[in-house]
Length: 420
Image (cartoon, rainbow, N blue to C red; front, side, top):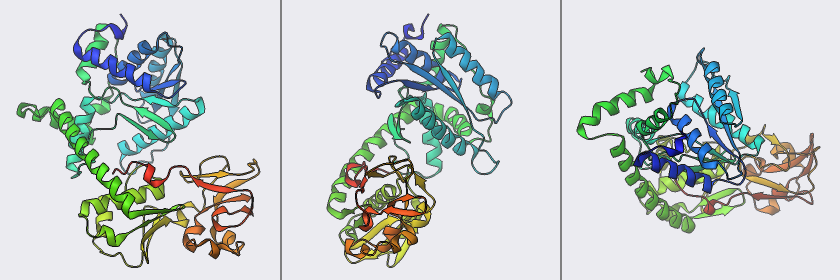
């Protein structure tokens, strides 16, 4: 029996959520990230059933972290399941673990990077993830331990963009027990990862804590509702921040200028959020800076002089606080002229494979005799995009040098969600 014929309200809701995710997906093929565990295998079968007859292609991808001897065999088992369903499967191997730092955090970041690169190469715009209500609750507990605020305690995003692809979590309202029951109904098995019982890992300890809290009525469903309440509070804050930003933040090409005097009269949390949003935009970052670092800067009052944080320079000037890209962060960043550079710049001009885009730097700026007429800050121009042919400067649009090229920001500051 196909998984899409399972009974029960929970199963029906899961099917409906996956169908909605498919309907909302980017045009073209869709991928499912499959570890082999119950959550991702249930999602795979739900998506496979949901796409039947639509003419759209479903692909599966597994990341083999190479951390256990069994991992390669487990990836092969997933591949065999996909073959039985008549769909393609790819295994991506991570070899970046050096034994240092937070293993699970590094593995998670590697998964997103590897899968996104693979998806773009396949022309896939949407990737489905099997996170459940249980994952939501465990994450909530872990973030409480880190003294997270409204954003950290809000629900996991059901849909988000990262690394050029859209990621969807259609099962966030479904508990793991429901998915396992659905798999048992059709006689399907799943892989039990022994690391799920290894108490060295924070998530495993959070899972155990959740079981201990159940007698108090603190279970996955309760914590999911609390996370939803926090999301509603976050959304209200974001609306307030967006309005305040329109009044106090000016975009100057790739820089932002904050009216620090006007912001001084607002609550600390609003000022913190404005500053974080500005740093994330200038750095084109996936994640905000550490809360403590931002609060330390805010504690300095007027922030006289110059500071660096998160690959950005913060400089006090007449009229406000200017935030621009730090040259040392992008000095070795080079790419094709028809690709987005530093996550936010797109070059328009006579593209040629012999050309590349890289930071202007000191050597390039010396060739731009009229750069002062642009009114741009010298240090900011050093980190601005320029067109090069080898070591020869072809154009520096923001420094007023070279014809035929224009540098444009791909997403203006006020068009982005001001959350974090």
